[in-house]
Length: 156
Image 1 (cartoon, rainbow, N blue to C red):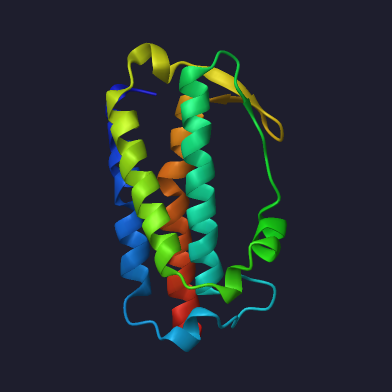
Image 2: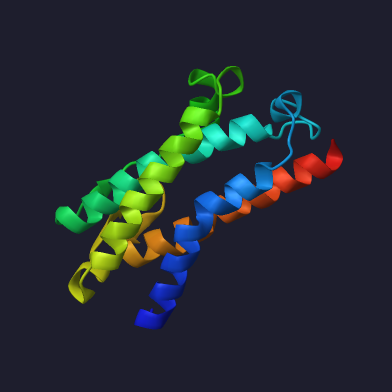
């Protein structure tokens, strides 16, 4: 990955929180927990997932940068959603967690050296896992879920 490609992905990553907020504009409180697509998450569940995923991913990046051969553990996101009561909580604190974790991680990303961009660890579900792979995944993560929220809104 070139430096320019990384910078573009960092900009996209930095915009993720705002993209999620834009996707929620005008959504009613009742619509937040609606599930118009059988087996898919509600908008509220998506927001809580983003917060939990973002806090987890922030730690993953820090482990990759700070530890040699870091082990990155996978988790079952559906089990998380159930156990963390995703549809029974207010989304405000989760939006704040998403915002704070993203802002802090953008600072880390912008300060990383070329050597740190080459660091790798091991993901328990997908094998070799680098800081660049991390960026590729999480630059789009919030945007993808914002698009999912927009699709839910169209159906409601």
